[in-house]
Length: 432
Image 1 (cartoon, rainbow, N blue to C red):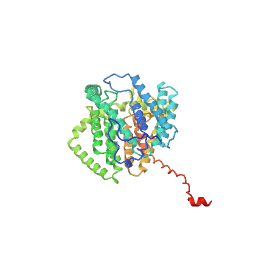
Image 2: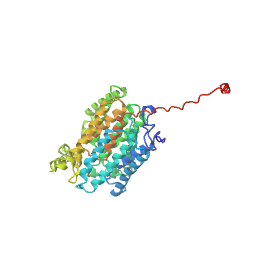
Image 3: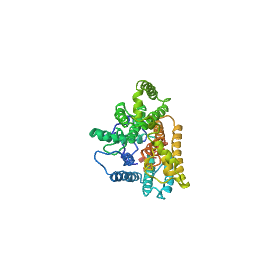
Image 4: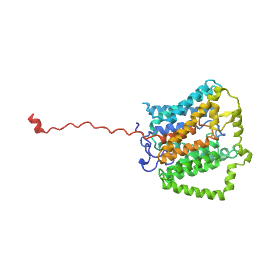
């Protein structure tokens, strides 16, 4: 294993490494290159569609950067794991099986040549995860890389807001926060902010980071989450944290105190700030628009009512841009059904069930709590966000959960020193 290990904090990133090295198994043995690979995977999943940026970026240039990041991630992962040492992973195995309906439906070219391109992208994504499984040992190394990666992304969002507030909060999106330097939509910003907030809270409760370091992450992330007005991310953060902290209550006094204070604050907020919270969730929409999930329900009904052949029901129409009739589907299950059929939906469901089942069987710990948070967040978000069937941030979240639930790698047997040569006294040699 490479001796280039990750120590300390990368320039510009928050300190989430925690005091004692023993508290984070696997960190000391993870090459720094693995963190770079993870960042490149995150860059690939940022996407190329979003609001207008301060400096207009051609979509072709953005796609070139994101796809180049994926190729570089695969090449670096291969370079750091030349012997192709991988660990068994039901999560990555199910993702590999998901390639089968994706390819079967995409070769028909019903969704155009872009479907084959997306299949290649998914194959590279899954292949990179296989190469990284060598370092999946139940430690917190990938959690820290995840936080640093999205902290950097949110830093670019904050910089864009500071440079050009009008571009960062355009009227086109109802005054919600968007990426002004890189085209990011409000749901993306809300998702990244919610995920790193939840993970940092759990690291703080487990004493794997300091209060000051946690505040550097949590406070700005919550501000950006509020400015993005993302309801799905907010609900996912609250429910995911409730489940994760609930898994620690019996074994962690800080978790019990945090849970008690959270319940008290929620009760006070429900009484005193109920009108403000209601107005924030409605975002100026009518109750009819809110009940139809901002028009999503109409797209879902049309997608389900569309006639399909037996092949399309089983394997879908091929990987696309997660839209139907020009409108975003915004539901992972319907998007998978549309593009990968019932076979793909069954594989995605099995993926979540396997991860959830393994998490329930693990003893209480901070890594297990982080995994539960990520699994719960992705399951909740899947109702109004697409991405579980293709290379996306949601699959990266679940990959982190899989790394946390992996059994620790068996320790290498200690090297047996060569038998020392027996020394013969001089008087004995003389007698010979």
